[in-house]
Length: 234
Image 1 (cartoon, rainbow, N blue to C red):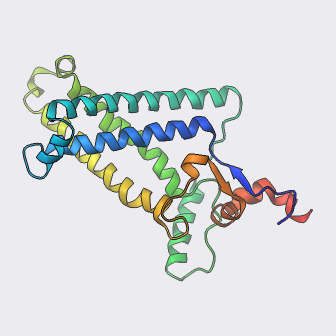
Image 2: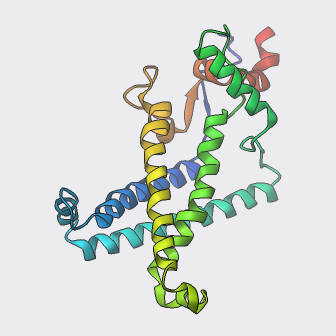
Image 3: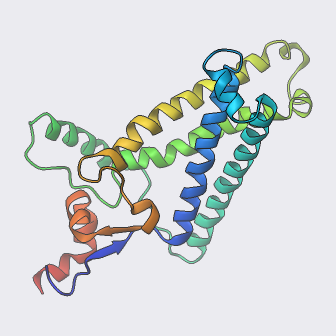
């Protein structure tokens, strides 16, 4: 490798890593307590609720984790605004038409219909989906969870004729969207980022924020060429 090209590159700074740690920690607490509460009177969920000290304590942990997750989400918006203020905001997470092409080419690659991987940029289409799914989840899960947490205040927001069934709708929105998020995170996200044979049993990118140049060139060739394209000929 050319000496002018470093051995690794920092993809995520300390602030983003801390935000991510708070995000997945609170998410796990919400998942563990939330599904235990939903089936609190059925085995084996009842035993799981006992692990948290009973339904009341599990509910308290669930609400505290939800508030912390919401605060983390709000902080992230101010983090982005600050980057924009400093003119240091890169729009690499925005979905682009190229992502559709990358998706098609990636399926063709896995099916043996294409020899090369897609020319991925800093983030792949799946990583962008990961990111924007949080916004969708915060709207559905966060809003419904907030209204369920403060039912007296929420009652004033709905017309009287809806109060007989609106709570059932909110509960279904909250729990079903949470199930979708849990399944996606545990199956798709965990596999893609940690359980693949290349990084098993875990990628340390979330902890160090750094990726080797070889991995960058392999998984994000467009980003590599953008950063080091001129140096390859030195």
